[in-house]
Structure formats: C-alpha cells, structure tokens
Amino acid sequence: MDCIFCKIANGEIPSATLYEDDMFRVILDVNPASKGHALILPKEHAKDLYELSDETASRALTLARDMAAKMTDALDCEGLNLVQNNGEIAGQTVFHFHMHLIPRYRGDTVKVGWKPYRLTDEMKTELLSALK
Ligand code: 5GP
Ligand code: ZN
Image 1: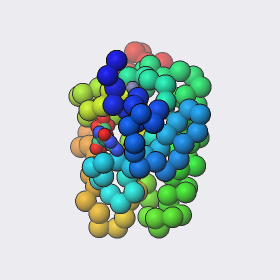
Image 2: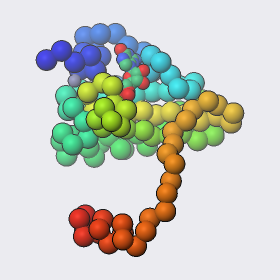
Image 3: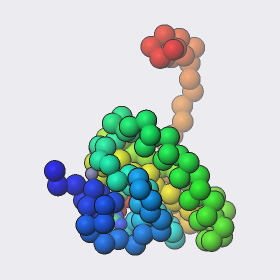
C-alpha cells in the first residue's frame, strides 16, 4: 500500500517532527492554517476514525491533550482547534487517520465552521429513534 502518512509516521520519509513515541509521530503540516499547525499521525495504518483500534483511539486523545498544552505554552496562542476529517465529503485528503492541531491567534485567517440551523421537534424525534 502506498500511503504517504505511513511512510512519514514510520520515518521512511523525513518530516519536521515535534514528538514521537512507539505509536505516534506528531509533525508540522506542510501547508499550515496557522503558525504551529501540527498533525498527529498513528504509526499503524487506519484509513479513518472508523478503522481505529481501541488502543490507538484512546491514546490519540491523550496525546492531543498533551500536545495542545505544550503548543499553547510554547506558541502563546489563545486557543486551539482539534480537527479530524473522515471521508472526502468531510474534507479528508489523506486517507490515513490524522488529527489536526491548529493553534488560534487573534486576527488569524483560520476558518473552521458551519452554518447552524434550528433543530425541530420532528428532527429530534427522528434522530433519537435512529441513534439512541
Ligand atoms: P486532511 O484534509 O486529510 O484532513 O488533511 C491533510 C493534511 O495533510 C493537510 O493539511 C495537508 O497540508 C497535510 N499534508 C499533506 N501531505 C503532507 C506531507 O507530505 N507532509 C506534511 N507535513 N503534511 C502534509
Ligand atoms: Zn497509512
């Protein structure tokens, strides 16, 4: 399988690495949305969130928390978005699970958003019956 993030995560392709352990590598995004934009890559291939193993899934969030704290301290950002896309329709372009850590600064040009609409009672009933 020819997966660029497998190669980066496992060190076959060099990258600007901020952190590495037995399961993950954290790198700087080559096209950052803001100063310090980083990606958390598991070393084990999973296409997306749906394919993650239990261990990778649970350790990923612990690592995101620790990286967020470290980056906020070092970069002096005022907040941070944790973004994770699944599927082309959701904006995924590299099909190896990853999480974006996007530091936020006052006046930056980052856009992570949607246009909210009102949840009606009918929608609520339908969703609760489908998902509960
Ligand atoms: P996605 O849209 O799949 O959630 O995000 C993919 C991200 O990976 C993008 O932000 C893109 O800039 C980044 N990216 C793609 N290829 C490379 C690469 O070869 N090296 C690095 N460091 N980042 C990459
Ligand atoms: Zn991969």
